[in-house]
View (cartoon, rainbow, N blue to C red):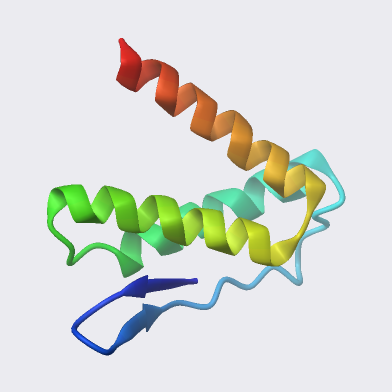
Length: 88
């Protein structure tokens, strides 16, 4: 998981998931929670607008990097719920 840091640097955090079975909905959900937590940590020092963008990109990149259909579905579902709340 990576996020832009100071000029020329990239803050990163490793998200381990060997203990999870990501071929199950529960495993994918737990991995997604870990990815979101890591993104919050990596993007914490950004200003508020940049922090949201940083977290969204870091999570999307990590999910894509794993390549799990269930993880991708969890991400889409969560993203859609957030969009509905923001639109209100």
